[in-house]
Amino acid sequence: MGMVYMIVHDGSMLIKDEIKIKVRSKIKELEKETGAKIDEMNADTDLRLKKIKDDILLDAGKKADAERKKIDAQTNVEMNRMMLDVKEEVICDVVSVAMNELECNGPLKFKDELRRLLMRGTIECSTTDKLMILGNKETLDVFDLNYLDAVKKEAGRDVRFEKEVRKMGAGIVLWDEGNDMFLDYSFDGIFRSKEDEIRTSVSKILFG
Image (cartoon, rainbow, N blue to C red; front, top):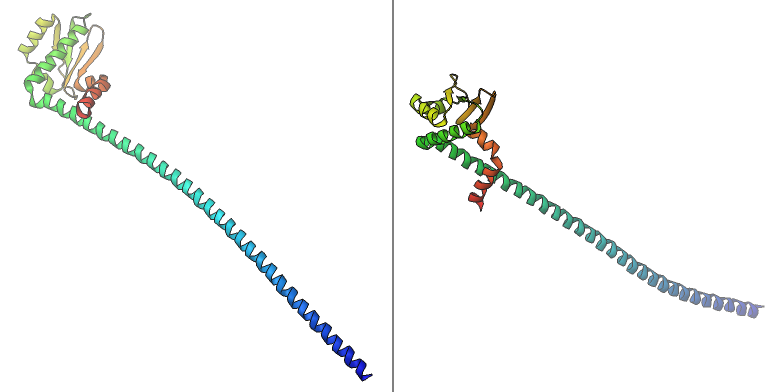
C-alpha cells in the first residue's frame, strides 16, 4: 500500500511539474507573441500618429501659406491705396500751389488769364450782346474801367460788372443775360470740368 501511494504520489508530482513547465513555456510563448503584437501595434500607432502629425503640419502649412498670401495681397492693396492717396495729395498740392501762385504771385499772368477767360466767354456766348461779370474782390479789382472798356471794344459786347462781390475762388463767372445762363470760368470750375485731364497731365509730369 505504501509503495503504491509513493508511486502515485511521485507520478502526480511529475505530472504537475510537467504541466508547470508547459504552462510556463506557454506563458513565455504568449508573452513573446503578445510583445510582438504590442510592438507591432506600437509601430502602427507611431505610423498613424506620424501621419496625423504630418497631415496636421501639411494642413497648417497650407493654411499658413494661404494666410500669408492673403496678408501679402492685403498689404499690396493697402500699399497701392496709400501710394494712390499720396499721389492724389501731391497732385492736389501742386495744382493748388500753381493756382495760388497764378492768383497771388503773378498779377500780370493772373490779369492775362482773366482776360483770356473773359474773351473765351464772350465767344461762347455768341447769341447775346449783354454779359455780366461775376467774381471775387481780387478778380474784380483786375477789371478797372479802362480795362473793361478795352474788353468791350475787343469783344463787341455790352460787358459790365455785377455790383455784388461774390464769395468764390479766382476766375470769373459770366451771366448771359439774354439766355439767363451762367458760364463758369472760375479756376475751380475749370479744374472740376477738366479734372481728369489736369490730373493725368500733372501725374505724368510728377511720376512719369
